[in-house]
Length: 217
Ligand code: DX5
Ligand code: ZN
Image: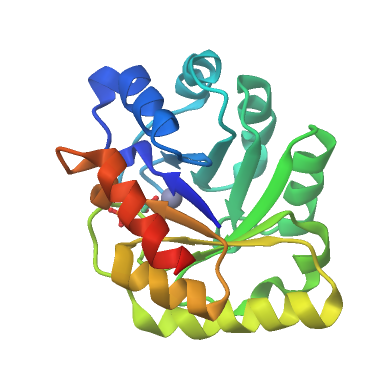
């Protein structure tokens, strides 16, 4: 079970401090939300921030690309120091090609589906990815409410993994708090992204511990 704090809710004027803080608190990945103002109605950061973060942490950088035609930028993010690059099924006409580009860049690859997208839309690429991310909110903003209908997709991905011997991790992102993390863990999730629950707190590492307790009990 892995916890991936999302820096979307960190203090952007103190990213180094906020990344080091959760690393000391037992985080497993640092989740980096890249938004282009086109695929989603918000703008965040680009490869230069990823390269600035690279030397400040030992943790894998889990880079979630919410951008149109991610094939235009995957090499930049790989060079910047991303360890995992995750692309949306809905963001490209050439999903298989983008995933190959990520592999060829020597980085772990992930595919992500929005709440309205079924697992069947990514069936053909499941054998080639290291991670499948199930959005449990509509992407674009932190602090939204968990959408329970996404749980069935986690179960489906968990069953497909077992039946076919696939190796991907199942990650969930959006509205994760201890209660929803428990539901996702029961459905088969392995990696839990949490933004506002962790960072909108006086004690981010206390919050990480509470999620850990909820998924490991
Ligand atoms: C949403 C982002 C999430 C976001 C989650 O578009 O992909 O990673 O940071 O935030 P919370 O945990 O607050 O729902
Ligand atoms: Zn994300």
